Image (cartoon, rainbow, N blue to C red; front, side, top):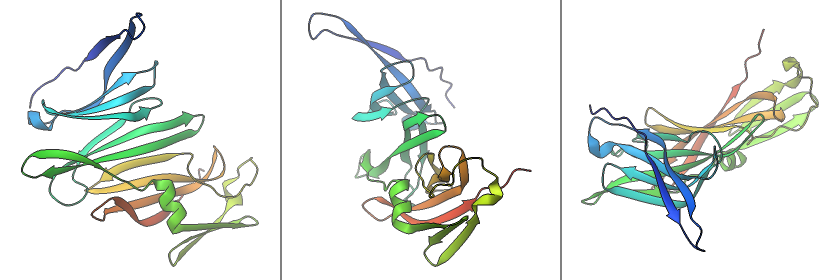
Length: 230
């Protein structure tokens, strides 16, 4: 396996009105493979000390895919290289942080499916967001201290009072904390269920995605109730 020390920072001078403006081009995430043509670099313009925009996905030495509208608000984007549609070709999954704050972490997912026709290339495909999936597949209702969660024919009932939260009891909601990750060849999305943002969580929705030939669409949702601390 090749050993790499990555410290790539490219400075580009732009002079639209005769004044030099420095744009720092940085590697935000990377995956180093045993074979050079599977090395992946996620490169972007640094806009301040934590935010980046105008991304490029580099695969190997000669494949470059530019995404000028991508933006990451804070911290490090997540990068995965895994087959998630069972075609024996490894896909690229990029998870960007679209919003971050006190108890808040919203995500934006991008999937580049690998194709061979006869050249190896990647094509970005749509992904249903975890929030849209939950809104489509889950019904939540609160009556008194009980929260009813209906997913298909399966119903969960959660007693809000057993968590001993010292916050107002609001209607259940999602979307403040999100995550995406591939697990054993399957893409999953996660979103926390709150009764008062940001601290009063009662559990998490785990969304399973499938490839329908055109996009990654939520196929099922499971509710994982938060375990009470002693």
